[in-house]
Length: 228
Length: 228
DNA sequence: ACAATAGTGTCTATGAGACAATATGGT
DNA sequence: ACCATATTGTCTCATAGACACTATTGT
Image (cartoon, rainbow over all chains, first blue to last red):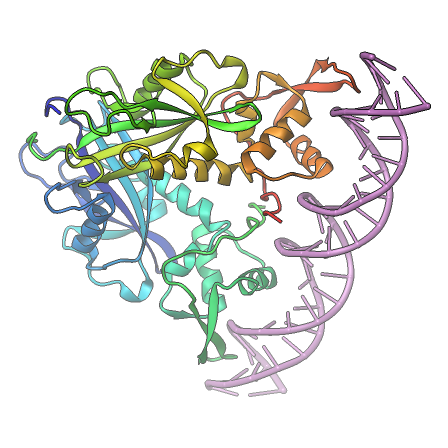
């Protein structure tokens, strides 16, 4: 009942996209104002939960997403919550971490203080707070689930070829997959539907597909063969 | 910085055990005092985060566990966080949900207001707050992970036979598994180590095993064949 | 000998992986 | 014709599942 002793509550969102054939994440610069912790450092976009504006945690995450990218509602998943006395110099705090998958055809200019970074280089920066750990957890969750789900499809434009989908898997996983096994796996599920169009180019045209559901991922029975 | 507008922060723990050949969960009765929400209803054990006593969220969950069962540190995993304006009549609140696996040989008398319930019957009770949803999520997480991890081993005594382990899987999953496939799967990993003892009985004695690690579960490459 | 459970073996089905062959567009 | 990529096919291998068989104790 009493106000005394309530932890600070924030939400941070790791927004992923495939840009320039690399898995990238959106980072923002911490403000420089007096009393601001980690001024000028790169951080995951986020901020305090606003109990007057946010109906729930997911609404708060969607609001951060909209403020930084203008995107409304792609795939969003809660990664977990980090809470403790030492993670924020302003006091005992909790942060609720989400990751979002932003489709390639809806990528607008990000907010002026925000910038896309390749995940590998982002993980070498010295991020604010414990955001290095949060980002690592989000990346690990994403990479792990990519082994047995259709999540990479949410990073593609509305219509895509199977080769493009395979390349998305390969850039996230950082290893190559076998073509025919990949195709049988994808087509064995209800994941995609062929559309009556083809991707033209200086070679054999490729069948275009769209997702059956732009919201719900598909879970496969097995993982891809692990690295090696 | 300002106190105004901070959400309430609680931790709730779904503590699971296998008792009487059933998956059971520990529930507590809500107190009857004036102003207490949901008086007398069953609920998951939990309560407010104490920023003076709890170093972090996991420490808070371990404290709840100790207060209700006397157990110190079995397997503990964060399920997720539920937060919103409407889930607690006292205001905008977040709850951090964990599930714990309590070994069968360490089950003491629970706290006086606590009682073990079979999960199936617990899910038919009208629990306090949104605890029905929290419990459902914890059960779903557990059942889902049991398909491809060694989690049921954390519910057994320190030494157990492969048949006992298989029965733990079967009671959690609610379906029977094939014996030889099960044994090959378990023995193909580093999960268990044989100890030089056998379980005697009115039949052929069984080899006893112990876990190689009492903390870290093993992940299998595939799930068990799904129901049917 | 019999009951009961532990432990093993054999066969089949499924799907992944490796790798090659074929198809179809542009130039 | 030739290049580049799409798409399909064939073979092998690993492992789960079904099911039956053998093993070892107590009574």
